[in-house]
Image: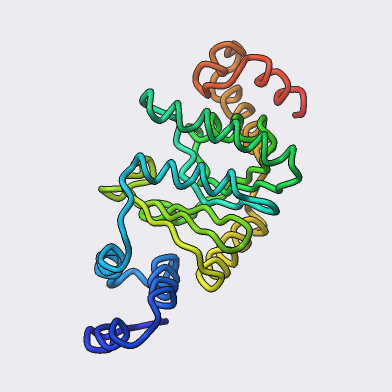
Length: 238
């Protein structure tokens, strides 16, 4: 387990390259075992690079998606849009996913398992992205997008919370940091308990029918915020 004293951290801030510092901070942030000092490390990250406002963060995400030529991967909350601005952002991301995939770019997202997250998974999958769900993904205080293994957009909520929207972010280019984030992403993507959108959504629908026999397709569709035709398609897979 990694441990950093205050004096060592001060020395690191004075001697190492900014990108390597950010990579170290993010690596520690992503560690499930290393919880002590997380807030202090995030505070130092905020002091190290320029902060993007919420609107600038989403603009950076869209720019990164437009510029991708090979691959886009992201760890996101998957929370459904709750405001007009959030709905606009999701719609734009949907459109860019479709354009990227049609241009040969592979687009993948990992999302924490939650019934409310099926809505975004449906929309992104429909647009052409590959989506997998897994428990225990650390997006509560860090969510990110990596384009072509180099360009990174990091989002942070305030306060922390799985469903909290991103309030600020950072954008930078670093193959070193991108490699760390991609390793974390692949560990979730390839995990035995990671499931694709179709499988997860079908499981949720099946469980809803067991709990409430005779529940109407329209009711399920309304609760999951997906079309009734999608409910019937997923139900037929079971």
